[in-house]
Length: 276
Length: 286
Image (cartoon, rainbow over all chains, first blue to last red; front, side):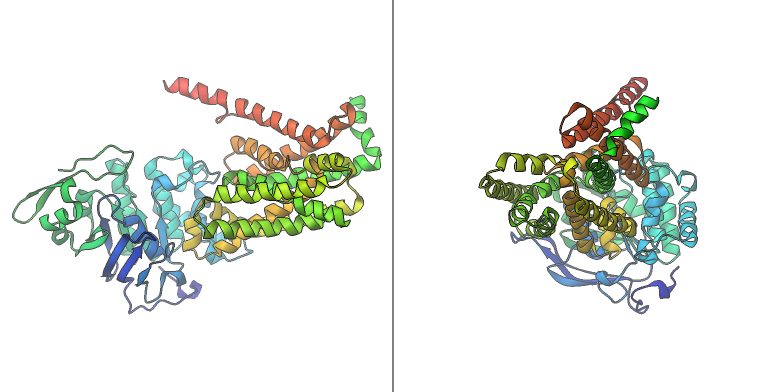
């Protein structure tokens, strides 16, 4: 997926795609947004980052992407801090995007490449080929001249995935990409995320949907300011872990090998979801 | 038809009108191009503040007999960088910091100017511009600075685009975000300085945001928005100048009034995003 010459920094291929050690972000007031988080992603997997509102999912992503800086601890992406990489893509929550902005779909996808293009240069026909290929991969090639606000929620999400593809991102952080989408749209997004993983990207997805996390992901990371559990979904979503993360917000109907969860943990401004 | 043409051409046989026309065109193109970023990034208040902050620089240069643009440019760039730095390093909200610096600097400028005997006339020129008083030297400076601004906007087009649309992406692509932010502020300061001669401190804001906002309602592409805004801006500037020649009103306000008129026409009649089109689509949805 990657030609290394284009990279400002070579990756240490023996190092894991992502290693987080004793990561904390403390507010000036003394409280913690995140406290002492340690985990390591081995190989290229699809990882769900799950936790209640305010658990620090977005904060974790901003730290990993290098948009925020931790007060203590470290993050290594292929053996180097995030600030030395252009291979980390962070796709924000839909509510963080100005959908009225006068840009077209292909321009948004091209944005992922501008560091590779370099200063004082305009995109070459090869860059536009990359953009076209990325749009085809997400099935949005017919919409390339649309303004981004003139798309459905699922289509908008796919455009941002195409942007990550055109960036040739190897660590992809998706903040609530599935929220508010119908099932066919969710499935389309999953297909793309899985194909990105198969091409060698580590894909992390913040979601509040425990059922999706349990069914569709290789591994899960349960978070509530602290790391509660990390591993295969069936181990992470155990009764004790869930109560630890959600407290009274969750109702766990536990069986022998799996827990049935009724959670009310949805995002602000949306209908609370009930998952059974 | 010939009469109309004559009415348009005749005034520019006067040297001061021709210089005014060229100045109006420079400002009419430049302000809306940079103003497109001001509109998209919600920097209107900052733009207005910068214009007012420049006043003491203009006044000091005026009192010392220097070219006004030099004082304005120095203060403008300094203020742009200072605002960037202050708002990062204090807990007071950015708009309050800007407001404090803006009002303080403006007061200083007016205070300095009030010690002069020709206070009222000078103040009027600085506040509202004096297109007909543009000298050759002013014109050359405006053209040179304007060219620098346009080249910079062109050279950093894709970086400014990403910074405006998605600052987080700019960070994850490891673009020099702080440098680009400051560069945009400095460009803004330069454009304001160029425009002060034409429309004055108090009305620069309109040149920046009014045509750009009208263009925003008419297109969904940034390059088209910039071109449309520059078109609206320069046509308003030329017509405003003619208006001021024939019915003897101040040129700066005449230009701004025309731009405002165009904006409201667009606001009501723009296809798709105008008020009428919106009402229609709401009705058909219901």
